Structure formats: C-alpha cells, structure tokens
Length: 242
Ligand code: ADE
Image (cartoon, rainbow, N blue to C red; front, side, top):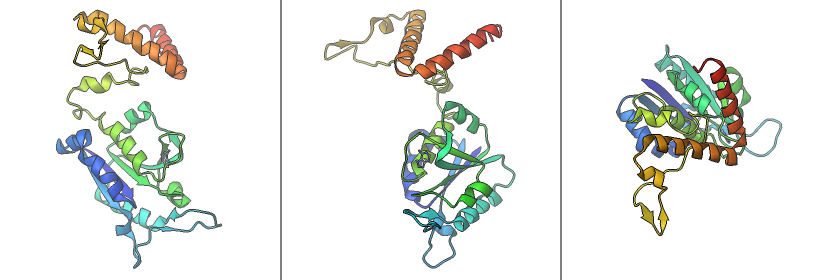
C-alpha cells in the first residue's frame, strides 16, 4: 500500500478533500494510507511557533527548520524501509505534469512538505527534501493546495483506485493529446443536438471522430503538445511500430 504523509501548519486546509470522492475510496480500499501532520505538534516552545522573520529582513514569514525536521524524522522512523520521496511544493520546483504523476505513482512513500507565505528555511530544502515541485507559474499562499493537486493526480493512477482501469489510460495527456468532447442525455437540449456519429453505434466511426476532435483541439489550443505528440509518434513508427 502506498503511504502518503502531508506536513503542514494548516492541517484543516487539506483535510476535507481527502475525505471525498476518489481519494476517500482509495483509502477505504486500503490502496493508499494518507496522514496529515500538524507542524505545531512538533514545536517545543510554549507558543508553538512554527514560523519566524527572515534573516536579512523583508516582508513575510519563513517556516522554522526544527519542527519540519522533527516531524519528517518521526514519519521516517515509523516507515523506515520504504522507498520514498520527500517533496517540497514551491514555484521554484520542477513543473508538474502527467509524466511526473506517473513516476511518483511508482514510489512506496511520498512525504509532502507544505510551505506557507515565503516558504521554508533553505536548510530544509538542502538537507531533507529530495524533490521540489511546482504546479504552475503562479504564486499561491502555501503548498497545501499544490500538495492536494499532486496527490489527486498520483493516487488515481494506483492500480485498482479507478473502478474502470481504462479511464486512467484513456485520460487526456496519457495519450499526449487533449481530450475529445463528451455528451450525455438528452439527445437534444434547447435545440442543440448531440453529434449524430455518437448515436450511430458504429464504434470504428466513433473512435475516428474522437481522435479527429482530440487532434483538432490540441492543434487549436496547445500547439506545443501537438508537436511533441507528432514527433513521438514518428519515433514509434520508425521503431517498427512498437
Ligand atoms: N506554493 C506556492 N505556489 C506554488 C506553486 N505554484 N506550486 C507549488 N507550490 C506552491
């Protein structure tokens, strides 16, 4: 079973998304075990202080190293032999994508350290963290929402989590293209009809239509993805169709 630990000064920020939908079911099925740790529980002072002013001055607060080290060391002591990554969420990190989600889903133990405001003392990053990850080129108030984004993308890839294994394999981005459009009942809504091909029952025609739509959208919206898709597929063809 995969073990995930979240280290945060704001445990309530991450609690409820873990208790709904896919993440809840994955835990109920014992495919993943997720624990949230409150950094304040790892302080030693009366005020349970987790942050402090930055040396050198300037605006904002920085998370102190001692509670983070103590918390992560307690977690590691509990799961000593696991193959693990210790991930710090930061805009300075490697940009998160589906490929990175696939890679992380192969590990036994993921520990997420959430910074807040200006982040964490650099010694945490230098001497504890194994990977720094950003979820995009924008600044959030803390690493809690990014940790949830990464955890959602990773946990749904664990075999058995999705009821229909197909649905992860056919996701947008696993194919390298954007997804095609979906419709459900009714056949006609306010005069707008579902494309006839989807009602035809002709599975080959439907597959062709979907592929064409996925290509068209990717060309219109994400030229960068289309280009890497086309060059990857060229390579597959010259490999002898593997
Ligand atoms: N913390 C603040 N902003 C972030 C981002 N874009 N990605 C990851 N962690 C963050």
